[in-house]
Length: 102
Image (cartoon, rainbow, N blue to C red; front, side, top):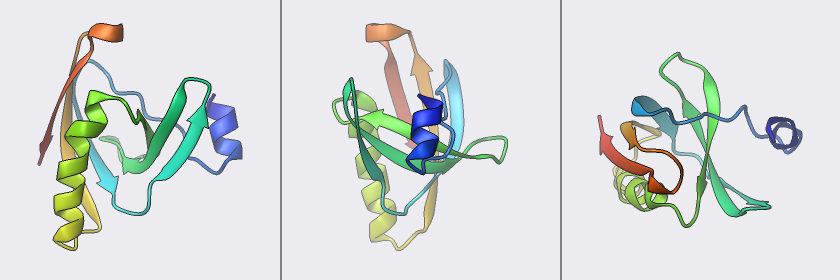
């Protein structure tokens, strides 16, 4: 999957680990990608190690519903990027996310 995404001009993918993940989302236009699992939105981010990566989120995910209000507020305030903390609990279908702006 990483190779296919890089062929489409998408940076290496960021994997949200269990626990707290601090990232900076760049507020440029996100890309929409169709995968075999459905439509995904790809955001350009900088991870906690300072590496530029891509965060791929399903349009049906609870994570996207938590991210959109924070991103909209940042865009409305004229920001170019927003620092957030994503806390991931659980695995598979029981995964839950908590998102807050830093």
